[in-house]
Image (cartoon, one colour):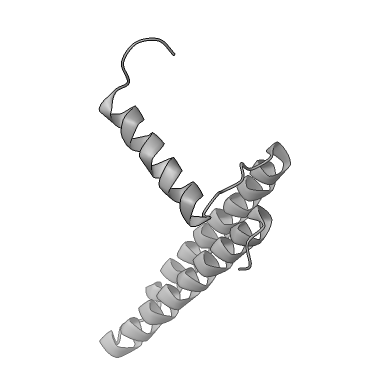
Length: 98
């Protein structure tokens, strides 16, 4: 590349150098890994959509505020479980220890 570098380019070079020096070198993700990650994300989003529908369905029959709060708490736990599972699978696909 000819000409002076932008502040962004200089900052990125410094960050890459710092990562290299500290041993935090990330390998690029292959096309197969990208496809697998996309599939994991799509499945998680589909599961979350399903959980949202089930949650709305459950709420239709709940009139007690305490019961409503329990249904909401269960929904949040289910969503968090799906998101945690998704992230762990992505880390494994990328070659991490998750």
